[in-house]
Length: 44
Image 1 (cartoon, rainbow, N blue to C red):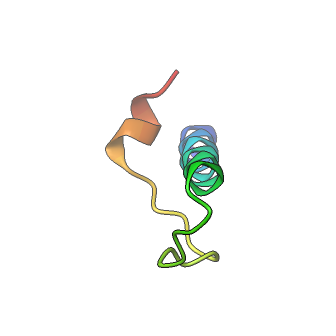
Image 2: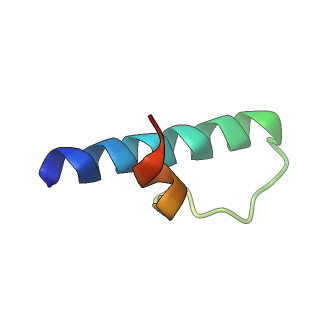
């Protein structure tokens, strides 16, 4: 279970970093939070 959650968090963090790189003017995101979504659990 731990590995599944860690992998989901990794995909969510990666998605957030890629989104921030695509739009550096978007300042409304909290830099200290990563929202894990269902899609992050099913990403392979």
